[in-house]
Amino acid sequence: MAQQMIDTTGGEAQKAPEMKIPITEISENHRKIPRAVFVEDVEAWVEKYGDGPIFEEMNTLYQKYKYMEGQMVRAREGLKIKVPEIKKTLESVALLYTRHQGEEKEVET
Image 1 (cartoon, rainbow, N blue to C red):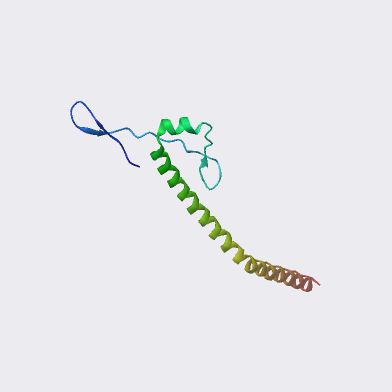
Image 2: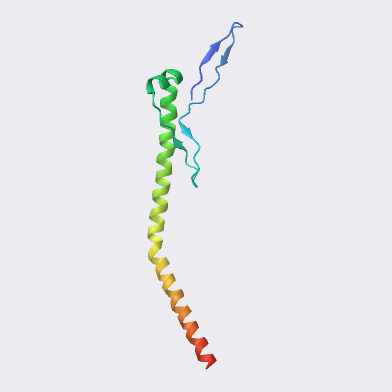
């Protein structure tokens, strides 16, 4: 984010303290995805923080959400591809288990 320069009485330009824009809040989901804050009075909010910094922050947040969405979509697709293989493996384990149970009964008699 761009920082504004302030000219002090000494003639040196110093960086203005950067104000944190409250766009997200901490959420307690397992993926640690921040939750967006609902802004009721948009005009007052823009007046307080400035439209440029808000736009930059929201654009950055949007890009992060799009990246997370892409990651989730790719993960979901990967899991969908694995489902048939997992079903076959489960069937094989069930077959081996029933055969093992049958062998134990033959040994006992």
